[in-house]
Length: 156
Image 1 (tube, rainbow, N blue to C red):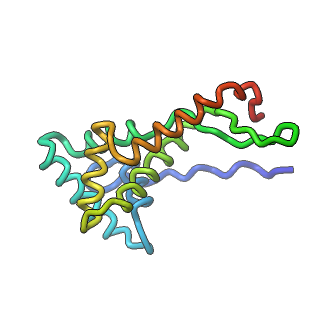
Image 2 (tube, one colour):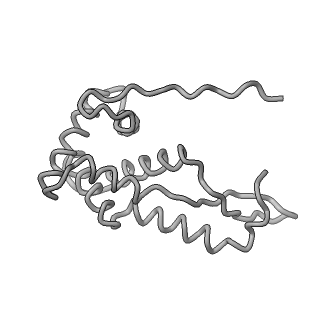
Image 3 (spheres, one colour):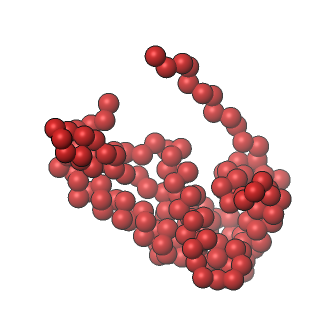
């Protein structure tokens, strides 16, 4: 039997924008516990985005994050000896997590020289519904829609 559910900790808002979502993104961006470096990379990225697009950088980042967050996904389910991919709706907090994770990993895989440039270009691409992070969301949705026939095997 399971014990009680773990409580969700509230993240403190970042000091520049006062947004806990920014802190959550920076925590995903952080490597080896270097949080101040991750914050400086993020803030410089937001400035570069606003310089390149001539719009508010934080709003472009939010738009990019919303464009990358998936609504549907697939889970594996064994039915009669066969493993089926059953489409499921993704929880809201998991959507945010996956969107951030895909944005950061896609930025890390890019070919630019610094992480600031990589993240800047990936955010701009995702806000325009392009780039590898957005493609990953589209692929996830395609996989879920192609397996709609198995949706009656709901996972409960």
